[in-house]
Length: 483
Image (tube, rainbow, N blue to C red; front, side, top):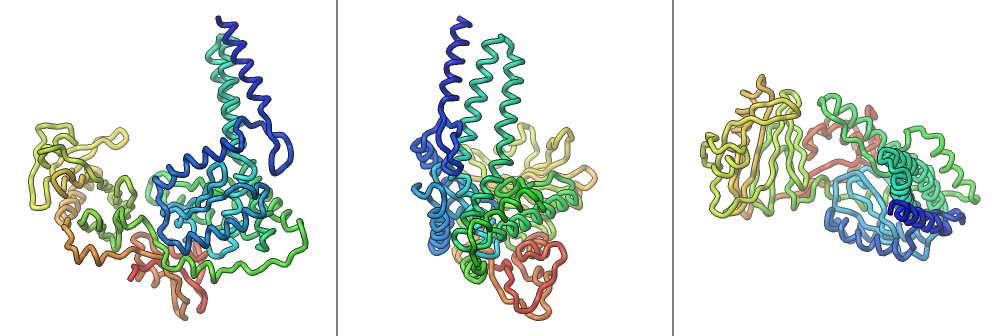
């Protein structure tokens, strides 16, 4: 029986290895197990999942602009016969990516940090490169082969440990493709940029912007004593002065003699003027550390100086001086469940001493962070018969007396909003202004709708991080409240 299974595994592996196709970029044979029609079907299937997760940014003019630019690049690609789809996602994340079959995505988050049409063309060209070189298909095929090879080795030797070792080795090879695939996508993106008349070195500008983001995040994380949230998207595998990258980008300039057109910064900045900043307003917005949710109709005030981060899953607020952290999320109440019973359930303590207030209910308890137990306050703010806002706040024993006072003030700030107040809620947006004599990032930060570390964020938005200065007459991106 074992011999028969071994033969089947070997035959399957041989069958997979024989599945090669012509690479549309190099003309060489690639080891792939997925046809082009299957590749397109994959992209079509997962496109719906991406849209459901992120949403399409509601700006038809901006969508049309990005699509037109993307289609111009795709028409110069090695797979111009594919039906490419370009979508601006309604996400503050700094990212761009591609699905098999020609589905390209770019977030408004990364677009806020770009400065010209040439730069966004560089990002889109890079993602088109991933599609034209069939990187996703090649990687999937490599993973399938590694899995089958693992099965074959295990069956042939009877050793699970040897099978696991082969899996680790082949997985390492597949993951090693990442660096080479990124470089190949850069090479192709540079070629497509050259073909539509933009200087391929615009891609180096984008990498500089993203690397400054990384430097800032690492410094901020160290200051806040936390793990750095390092960006892992487009161009992330490159060092800031990557010689291999510069070589492939500059090679594109030798394809033909060409005088490059201007980067078209003016048109691009005009297109993103008024673009939303931060989370979609439907998930609630934070202005001057006041969180307001128009759909749910409530507002709550966080202390000035705290960092407030809102996501679709939860809102997190931190005070890095005291180590305090607060998490706020939506919870469902069971039929007939009181706020007191809800908190007892959340704390897994039916003897919990819960006090009721005009805002809801609250109780002192303890939580475990890592391996340490800390004092905490949990609160429930009732929205309706079936929903409550659940808040949990904690800090060390040393600082909790101060933190607890803040948590109670936070609860007391909870207000239901009137229809008029809801109608007056405005989203923070990117505004492009002309710098005046005497403008400084410090003074602009004070007037900004940014809630935390506004000066550094403005510097990053305007290519002035960490210590650049403003020149009168230049175009500046600031974050204001949409009027």
